[in-house]
Amino acid sequence: MPFDPIIEQPLDQPLSTERSRTTLARVMGVMDANNYGNVHGGVIMRAVDEAGAVAAVRHSQGSVVTAFMDEMAFLEPVKLGDLLTTRAQVNWTGRTSMEVGVRVTVQRQGFQHDIHVSTAYLVFVAIDSDGNPRAVPPIAPDTDEETLRFRAAEIRRASRLERRRAIKELRERGIEP
Ligand SMILES: CC(C)(COP(=O)(O)OP(=O)(O)OC[C@H]1O[C@@H](n2cnc3c(N)ncnc32)[C@H](O)[C@@H]1OP(=O)(O)O)[C@@H](O)C(=O)NCCC(=O)NCCS
Image (cartoon, rainbow, N blue to C red; front, side, top):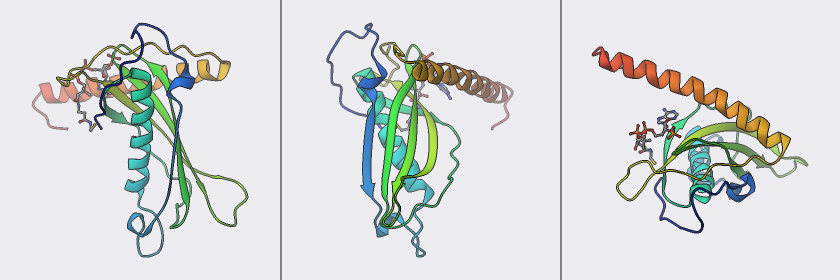
């Protein structure tokens, strides 16, 4: 989803993870759920995309597009009336792309603890006003946890690029994926 640019500081300065950290929350209403009160998976995916995009915009200080969303597993159903919370942060940066991790939880009446619904990883690409990829500031992982997240993101990136390469090869041979 495109966002208006907010230019704040030089783009070659490494930025902390903290800067991109984003929390969005919304109570699930009747339009989000089916007749049995279960929230549609697409509603949750949209919330993930929105929180991820805000984190990517905060890091890259300008517009971004979603380039890739990893497969998502839904561990628990989300119900009408739940408070759906998405927490996002940039885990890894390349030249123009960023991997954002998004954790989805719900607070439900009568439950003492948050319920973990899903964790998703998305790739956002920063774009300029012509829609072309633009450079993003590097991320500077500060803590051991952030360093581990950075390394795990590198592994996921290698697999995504391999999948992308395989699809490109199919197309080059005239086979539509
Ligand atoms: C995403 C997009 C800008 C990439 O453009 P492109 O011409 O393929 O650009 P590049 O090949 O230079 O890739 C740009 C970056 O994205 C990364 N990238 C692109 N596709 C990717 C994928 N499937 N998985 C992981 N990374 C990907 C590249 O590795 C590169 O990262 P880097 O600069 O950090 O090394 C373009 O495909 C696009 O506009 N797609 C539509 C996006 C969209 O409409 N999203 C939904 C609504 S927002």
